[in-house]
Amino acid sequence: MKEIISTPSAPAAIGPYSQAVRWNGLVYCSGQIPLDPATGQLVEGGIEEQTSRVLDNLRAVLEAAGASLESVLKTTIFVKDLGDFGKVNEVYGRYFPVNPPARATVEAARLPRDVRVEIEAVAFVRTAQV
Image (cartoon, rainbow, N blue to C red; front, side, top):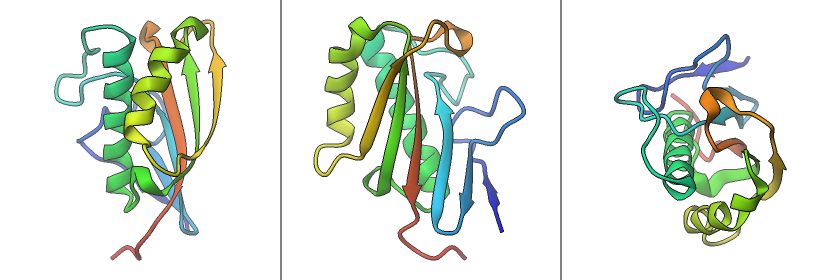
């Protein structure tokens, strides 16, 4: 049975979707954008700060589901400008320093709230949930 995952440690969904869904040992995380979960506001700074906040939000959702960044199998990165790829990649590499997941990167004309980056993920759950 699918289980809806929700945590206050990541931004609340801004539409009719769940932060993540856990099913059959896998966690499907919705795209995270650089909102501060405490304020609901976009983080200040450039693409590096936005990417870091997105990955922190993703980590929080994964942890709420019983997974982690280390258990991520696949990510999809959406960027407003593929010219930012190098900077996004540098920050991303700090969060996935060994055995990184499979990944696709796509330039999108426009992202929610006009952010510069959004990342979604699929991960496996390492331990049984109680």
